[in-house]
Image (cartoon, rainbow, N blue to C red; front, side, top):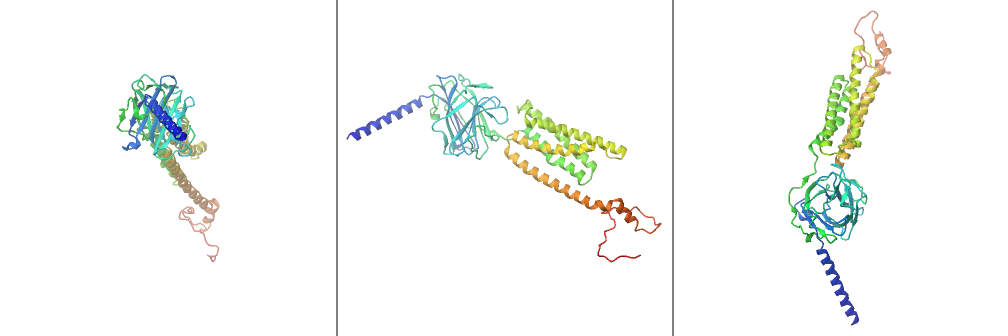
Length: 430
């Protein structure tokens, strides 16, 4: 009888505690946004709900959910990527929990992790029914290097983004992420979200009519960036190697000069386009990233190579002998192609385009094999013909003529000349 009485008291206490917790949760004010994610299915929605505790000046609580079919998902405070505080979420190493990385936006490049903002991931977080779910408290997130949150705003500028489809499982808060597949700007009424602190319940928001069914922003390549990439990849992967082959394999000097001049023009235009895009679209406008600096170096080497080659050819036309400066041209030319290919590879990484980086790497390998094979067989052919075109071989062929007999100069071996005689053939007597 006593056990039954204690069980009833325990059940009554549990019910009271649950009711108290639910009531406390319902009392937590929040502003919530629901946006259409990767599809019209509600399971793919992106939900952001923020609570502003009135008893703190540097903390916020938030609830965030997004489809886990994407490599990563994020939301942030800011009207653009540059200067925004962004909370990036992706799967943890075990694939069951989530890693939350606070990052600072620096333009249209991968945001960098900041240790100035602390995020405590709370109960209820993880990968649940195909969604990233994050209940968290952030500290030091009301102001940061580059921006701040206006807790009195009725329309705080916000942004969310989704990475490409796939898996990214890492416990590293500074893990590399690919370019976003889609994004959207929106606003939250933080003034109405201020009050008792706690993780907000997205279903009990003071602004739960903030639902967006509009189009998701396109995360595809921008026109200026695509134009820059096309010129540089085409120049170093196709046009420059073709010019090299015209000289070394087909021995067409004027075709070599014309094709390399076209490639240089493409590089100069591509460099100008890259500078313009960097400044206009805020892609490291200071032009001090590794990709940009190496790009300037490659462009300078390409211009120098063309000038040295032009001067050397003019000297040869006047004197009939190869100019000494052409030794430098033979070093600068392949160096231009090599460093240009490396910088194209770095450029894809700079743009966060991992897929493009892999495709370009494969294409580069195939091109090097193709050019190397043609060059190898051409040199091998020259080595075989070389002994038959020496003065000794030519004198030998001249000696086969009758004394006093005049005739045209003996042909070179391989150009209609006398074939070699087999050692086993019977001697010929005259």
